[in-house]
Image 1 (cartoon, rainbow, N blue to C red):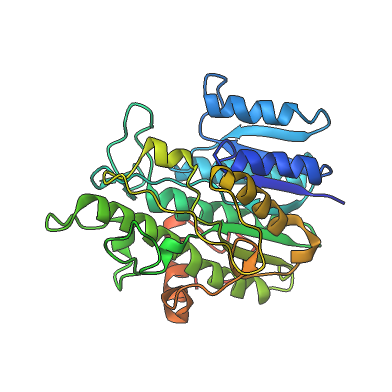
Image 2 (tube, rainbow, N blue to C red; image 1 turned 30 degrees about the horizontal axis):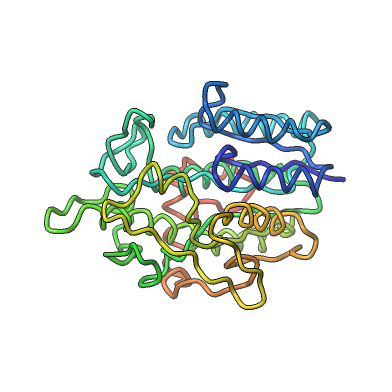
Amino acid sequence: MAGTVLITGANGSLAIPAVAHLLRNYAGFTLILTVRNPADSDVNTIRLRQTIAQFPNAKASIHQLDLANLSTVREFSGQVALDVTNGKYPPLSAIICNAYYWNLLGNIELTGDGYEKTLQASTLEPLSLSTLGVNHIAHVALVLRLVGSFGPDGGRVVLFSSDAHWPGKNGLEKYPPTIPEDLELLIKPKADATKEKEGLAFQRYANSKLAITSWMYALNQRLENNPALSKITAVALNPGNLIDSRSLRKHPPETGHHAKARPPASGTRVSPPESNHAYAGADVVELALNPKYEGERGFFTLLEKDESSPESRDKSKQQRLWVKSAQWAGITNDNTAVGNAVA
């Protein structure tokens, strides 16, 4: 039986084409779609509603979720778990962690949770956005609270990586990403007046993608070692440099340098630059739901299995990041089905 697919940031540049592809090709699935602003005054949520309306039999609902606020993430995941238990939704088949945040133009600030955010928000953005908080910590909180809501056939957790996680591979990089010995520096990085502000902001974004990729391996290890969860697998996807992203229009690099579209892996189709998100959205859905990828885990570029950076594959760093991420996200052995969640 087709299950439920949960997508965060569902009114985003990649997510709307993904929703359309899913409803067109996997019509039996139920969609739980989260957005920060569900109001009809939000132009992106309007586009999401219009997309869903093209499919009269769609089983899709839109929910407000502010990933910069961990308390709302906990409340939301608890409600979804309860709704699955009570039969309101079928068991989960996939969680697609699409939502993300970056901004290259501002100074370091902290959210209400105490985690780094990239700048003082403009009038177009709320004041609680956080790079590591939204991109990584909130999704840790969401995924680990909901792994027990997957069905007996398992499914997929799709996390979003980037070539930015690998030092030297992204044209916007000025300072290479790294997982520091003191992991607290990931959430409370020190200001450095001697370094260029935009470069440090991009490094914080790249660090979040490195953390996501590294954590993915630790998650897979624990899922594999848990008989009840072993059919759930996690992938970290590099969808390519999506040059039609809204984020490049709203928060462009000061230098005006936009990343070029990454050449696809061998054997895959070439994405026209003007429609990268349409192709990437389809890739995400296929990786999450297509039986061809059943049981796949690890790092992907587009739809090709790939190798992530050496640092992301460092098992000692994966372990340290796993423990710290659970602490940041408020995960304990009592609120996740993953055994030894904090060890």
